[in-house]
Length: 363
Ligand code: SF4
Image 1 (spheres, protein in one colour):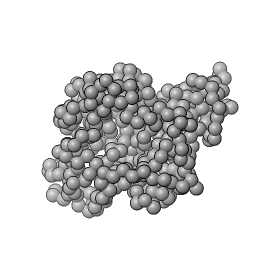
Image 2 (tube, protein in one colour):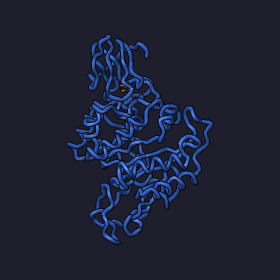
Image 3 (spheres, protein in one colour):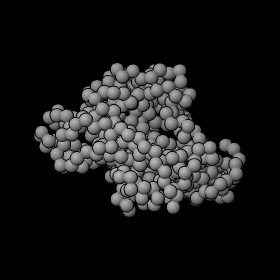
Image 4 (tube, rainbow, N blue to C red):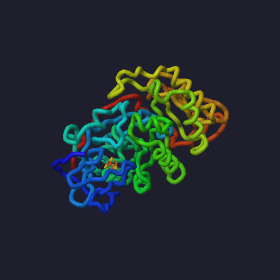
């Protein structure tokens, strides 16, 4: 931790003073203990006087309209656009990070656009986005800004989506997830060794978050596991992960196995073969999970949604594009009437696979 000059910042929540004069941040399980002038590992939370502050409130690394399938969420307003943004920094240190230019950025390197919560909500409405996603870096570390943006969105009739690793302290979980209508939570691997070695984090804390969100909130959740060759892709680990999801969260939580591509500090690891993703999908389905998807490859069979009762294809999907729709107006199977879990409208959106940068005026 290093001494810095502070720019504009707002008071942070979830911290307490220690008897030795340091202040402990309780927002995430790292529990950084800070002297005056120090920042936490996430770099965006810092000690200023006797409190913790968030130094990136209102500042973003840029806005973009994405397909909701890119978050990935396959059971939440399919085919619609989601206004997506991130800030800077992260509270994990994943060596395989696919957004390292943002997550490893220090605020001043990267944050260029200022936008108020109300301006973001207004931009979502004007652009036709049905939801706003806190993504690209982990929104847990900018909780105060994310919660304010979420409140403005709800006021405007716009849904909110968190894309997160779920590495959040118990005290902060209720406020954070109460603000989110949907979340995609990474389950990066299924051993403490994986989390410790590649992310300097802990698996247990993430499992606690998954249990909490599923059983104690109304937030719709889907889970993503990025399979990295030789690190977390063994049949044994995929089986253990799938069985845990089945037993602790139930069969209806969608699980996405996505392909790794060489990045950040793991450029020597090869990309995930499609066969690995398809094998993982079969293992998870064998464990009883009803909605298991492959991602970051073309695999229409593995990316479509099927009725668990009669086997009919409910939604055809090729990467981010909806190719077929066979749900009735209530979101149930058009063939047998079995409901499909999630949030569906009578018709899919038509956003497709487009990705469009967006400029938001500050006020
Ligand atoms: S949110 Fe940041 S400062 Fe707080 S404990 Fe986590 S890494 Fe440390």
